[in-house]
Image (cartoon, rainbow over all chains, first blue to last red):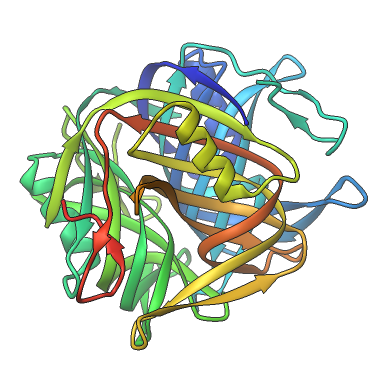
Length: 140
Length: 140
Length: 140
């Protein structure tokens, strides 16, 4: 169990810009409020989406693209520093008109409408390479 | 990127009433604590559900009804003022006995059991008509 | 509407240990920070999972096992005291390489990678038997 106590320096609600990229908008929010560590939840709708699935045997991400309008039924993630840049690690559950869902690691998606609640931490969260998983994780 | 710094005036946990409406219970909680702006996450189970999917071309909501018991695997949303009333914008991921899911904008659902964490903001969040999407969004 | 105002005594981010049990890791976090009441959201990936579905007629949980790698697209839950022990009530949405999802009450899952944000409350949340649902709920 690796954990760290953090304190919140600011709380924000944001409306994501129609036509912009979902993840980049969250990174822009973190940048605007100068947060190098943050946690968020969000909801809304997107015009398309690219999800990534991590292959736990091959240790590589496989992308899947959905070129269709989808509701963002759930979105949970965090902002930390990866290779010197703010990175929003973003997971999402997306749904179709009949309620059917697709979900995973959200790399990119075109915002139709989006509402985010973000807590900026007063501490920086840094990612570093983890040998076992070949992912960039927090060495807390 | 439209965002706004907010401050939390109170934090609440709530147990939703069996047999009541899921969204109305959250709006009743916001009313009881006099919150005109709030963010929540929740989990539980419902006896039925009505989801809405927003048609991004026709700019209208299409309802889908599920008359069956479902787990609430995820629920994220916010409370703001729409046409002078408190409105809980609620997205949810629901699941069946075999794990299969349906998800979207939750308009109504009969609570079987529900647990909510809500942060009441000291500011009011107001929705207003957005021309591009024809939705009621925050003009932050 | 049964609700209770609570205050947060500490905020934590945690990285769940690869190979450990997802729910037990969250309970270990709550134990490490001595929280008898907490709320969390999380994301990551698991190597397998056991979900439970509550049968609202038979009033009993039915387990389903998934012996495959899955993304944790969403995870929401809380920590409270059940029969004298810390219990992490955990709901999750899991996804496959093609984006397909399964979801429900997460009893157990082997962590591949996991990131959690937990708010520890200064109050204890206790569960007690609820006659109507035959579940252990908060008598708030």
